[in-house]
Image 1 (tube, rainbow, N blue to C red):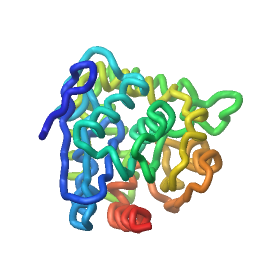
Image 2 (cartoon, rainbow, N blue to C red; image 1 turned 90 degrees about the horizontal axis):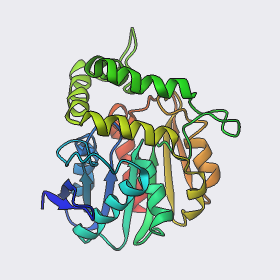
Image 3 (tube, rainbow, N blue to C red; image 1 turned 45 degrees about the horizontal axis):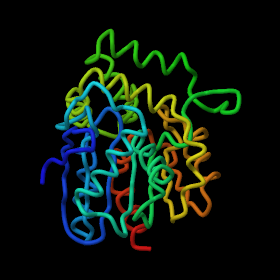
Image 4 (spheres, rainbow, N blue to C red; image 1 turned 30 degrees about the vertical axis):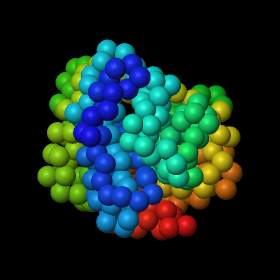
Length: 274
């Protein structure tokens, strides 16, 4: 079943690996479900069922003109859960933008079938800097993302993904080939979805969704994340979700599922084993 059709008729590409207790993985912007491959493979080998899908507009999924708000994106997640039959004892794990779908699913769909959750370098609870969210990202910085994409999308993502993966002038936690791979994933997405989703993850306030988390929740965030600042997101989410477990990766960049792949995979499997 490589594709499922959402309630509004959008085709979503789905990977379904392994058997056992289901773990649904939602990817970050501007990548695709391929960015979860290392973890999905480890999950399947450990006796779990790993389900990862390309968000609408990205990867191999359809690119409709509308539907890039979090309510619609979360309904897409619900449709994936339903279509794959992963409706009981499911764990939802969202990376970066994907954390928003996890949070909104817990409130909008009352966490139906969910027994555990993971927010990994996630945008939850609120990215935008406001008077009551002073550690967030300034509006001008968020606006520059859209401006850069419109001006020269390939060049913008080359620079953006280097920061995303912690590539510096002297040291780099990943090879040039990994950056090239991430760039190719980003360039699979449509221009409209890329811009619309940047608007959504930068301006959607999930603070009211936190109370809906009533399951064990793993929060992992890098302390050197320059893309999604830890104070406004990971640390704030941990304070707002009762009983959550915050694991900080000292010095890790935003793309820690790639740069710290082995450590993160082990932490995820340990969490799932509980």
